[in-house]
Amino acid sequence: MKPFNQVTGMIDIGSNTVRLAVYQVAANGAYRVIDQGRWPARLSQKLDSHGRLPLEAIDELADVLRHFRRICSMHGAQRIRAVATAAIRQAANRAEVLDRLSRETGLSIELLSGEDEARYGSAAVLRTMDVADGFLVDIGGGSTEISLIRNRKLTEAVSFPFGCVNTASRHALNGGAVSPSQLEQIGELIQSALRSEPWIAHHAGLPLIGLGGTTRALAKLCQRAGEYPYANLHGFEVTGKTLNDTLNKLASLSLDKRRKIPGLSKDRADVIVPGLAILRAVARQCSASRIVVCGAGLRDGLFFETCLPLAQTPTSSQVLEESVRNLTALYPAAPEAHLAQVNRLALKLYDRLAPHAGLDPSARKLLDAASRLFKIGAVIDYNDCPDHTFYILMHAHWNGLSHREILLTAAIASYRSASPLRRKLAPYRSILKEGDFDTAAKLGSLLQLAAALDRSESQAIGTLDVSVSGGNKLRLTATASRSLPMEKMEVESIAKEFRKVWGVSPKLTVAQPLAAK
Image (tube, rainbow, N blue to C red):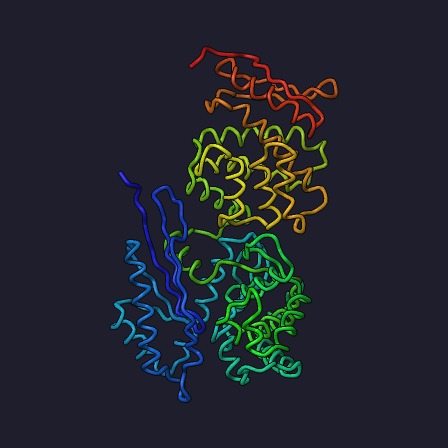
């Protein structure tokens, strides 16, 4: 019998872009995006002098929505949830627009308030990032939402009626370079509006979490310019200086030259300067310590609240826990009992050996994740499983760790020996810290030893006593349901490599072998 799959389409009718995401939720709780679509709508630009959305713009939008609906039907979607934001919210004929779109497409379209947008955006952040306190900013085409998170709770939220598209129109940024005085004028007008909400200036030093296309475009440009080795936007950090330098550089160029910049999509070239000007004004007003990119957004918040609702917001550690659970459910390459046993033994070894190894306390978190994901590469092929594991963990969408921590976890989970580890980490030197190679080697070899202790995948070891004797002997005394010949052989085969890393040679003995099962 095929496992039940719930397929849901989420359509975000934004002021700048209309986006589709099709999500699949399997019977085991695994979820993923199975299709996406986007159309540069520029609805805010199409409002006429009376604030109405013209008929031809409505019909063009209806055609796009019908196309998105066909994509959803192709995937067997049981539900499509379509929401409209600022451009339609601000349209003088919004009731007519919604009615016509509904009749033309067969979709029931919800008109979100600015506060709704902020709530769904915060849900996306809190379900995909481990941030405890911070500002959230979502710069759309026709509005900007700013929220405040304290102790992982949404405490303040406001929507302003300016975005990258209508700001470009309002200041006639129609193709030429933008002067420094124009930029400052735009920034001051934005900050003047922000001052109407005093709480924005009362939490200096918090990170600013950026959602939406403007912040993602900034991240892509920064990654390209700095030859950043990891093509993942979620969690990428940008300093205020980098934002300032990037904005000034782009503003000094004509639209034609902006369209030729590697990493900047052509359909965003005309709105990237006002978008970044808004972002800079927000960062200045809230005195942000740094800008962190969130790859999730409104559609993800809608998906979580619609398909995977929670009674309460997950804690920071639960974000990572849920991500690991989802990955193992998506790629079930090993028995759950085996993974649980290896995880238990790896953490037992860590707790005994780590206090004397000078490891950072966060290392345990990385080993915990890696020990539950180390077999994930077998879904591609059992041969070269470590290499496949590294690839999947570096390219799959998962949350709760920084880019550096994802890299280290992938290295630990795929560890074989020091030389392959060095080759894997070499392209990523710029995001590693001093000592990270030794950390990955130590934790990787610990995981390798834990896996050897359940080589038969039978969970025969009940208890394990770990002790160091003679200065260079790691004695592993197990109570088990049998004599563990495979485990002893596997421990012996890795003993030499383990000693290179840890300075001790592991030896397994069975204290109380019981009758074989």
